[in-house]
Image 1 (tube, rainbow, N blue to C red):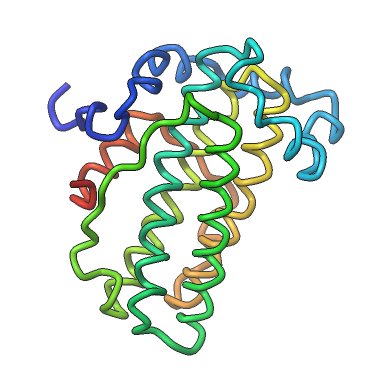
Image 2: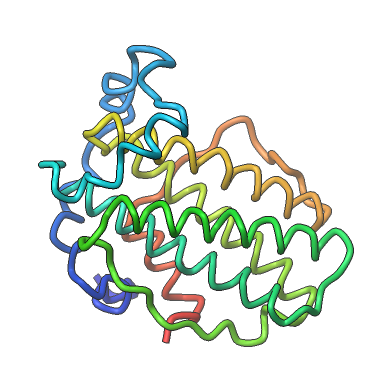
Length: 217
């Protein structure tokens, strides 16, 4: 389809492409069946943090590995964006605090996902943020787009995850991304929760949005 990005630009090692067609087809009802045993189905961070590093060699479904690599690609983008903003040191006050804290979170997400994937982890792309990390208005607008995109990306894949441990990992990151989104919306004087419900987006939709930023070089 025209207008969609070439996965090769994001998926350097091909792991996402290998299973991308398989992971967008499940329904939210499927997710409820997988997670519906109650709160115990979503492992606490302390439990899965030590368990996930072996998933790449533990017979986990390729589609789940692809989902984690997809998440890792987005986390690379966010971590690099905030880290560059912090290193440039242009922002103080509430925006500077937001940038520093979110940079730590996103880098922690990257480290966690890379540790979980091991040798199966996709490589980090190169980025050019086109001045958005030094201009206050551009930074705040871009941060809102990235956080909203991250929430939609995770939400779009939770119903496709087969492993409860991986579901727990994604489930622990999603609410943090949602809090980031609400935080930057507050800083931007936008409604933190503009509606009672939010739908997810497919890989194709998210990758098209990422492509459209022009940040990946």
